[in-house]
Length: 268
Image 1 (cartoon, one colour):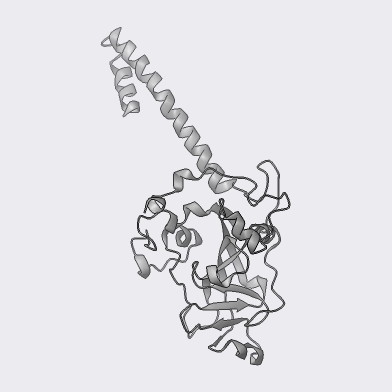
Image 2: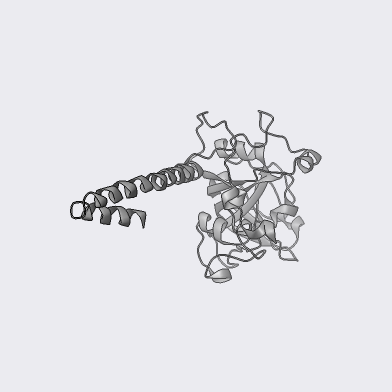
């Protein structure tokens, strides 16, 4: 509206001079705060989407792994933006077929399950992994490091929903949402059966209570990921769980102001 007022005052300035000229100058001055606001908003969103590095000081340069897309603050996720707990902001709800990582993080609840089809090999699925701030930084820079052991075999473990990582993880504070190529998949209902399985890329455990998880043998199966960081973690809990901080001693090195993203969740 200010811009329209400025244009109209300029058009009418000669006809109604000098009053019209005065109005055009006044309208021009009112545009200055709006332009400053637009500039600030642009810089803020540019920093969030292209220059947010919570594991490094803002001015420190670092080369991340090519599969690492970016970091995002936890407050931008769906469950931090809704008035109703575990309610998706996506208009398609649970019927949404999108597997875009940004869409999954920002528009779907943490309890949304992304279970693969039972009868197909070579599926590319969404997997969730939770770890510490320190290990998330290492993954972003050097890729995943498969575990030499685990209850369904060696490899990298993923849950089929974000919320399930809360009771599956040993480290906490950073959530990884990844696109994973399952390759040749073996489904099991008994976690001890993985020892008898050979020639498969992925072991998929069908949990009796629906908290499925899968283990991929090679990090090459992890195609891309986004790391969602809790910028305000429970420090006492992290210490109890022996979660090491970053080398600097902090859990978040480069803090982005995220109050603007905090929705009604904190008012419920």
